[in-house]
Length: 61
Image (cartoon, rainbow, N blue to C red; front, side, top):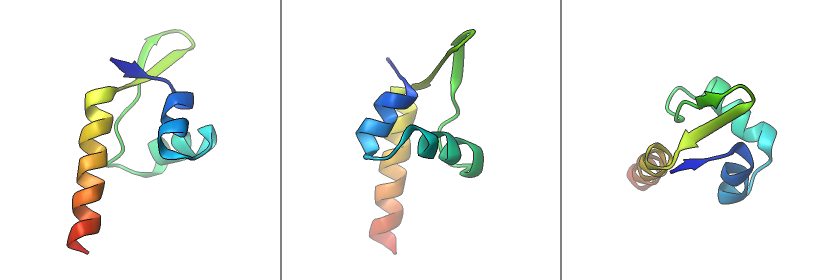
């Protein structure tokens, strides 16, 4: 399953530009996949793994 930038923004309670900023600046954030021209998505499994890693980091801090 794939998620759009809007779905990611809704999931994390941020704006779409924030999702793209994370993509640009955070090397740990999942990489987007270009499915076709004008259709960029993120793999749900990779997003969930990233969420888990973020939760683990917060718990260790």
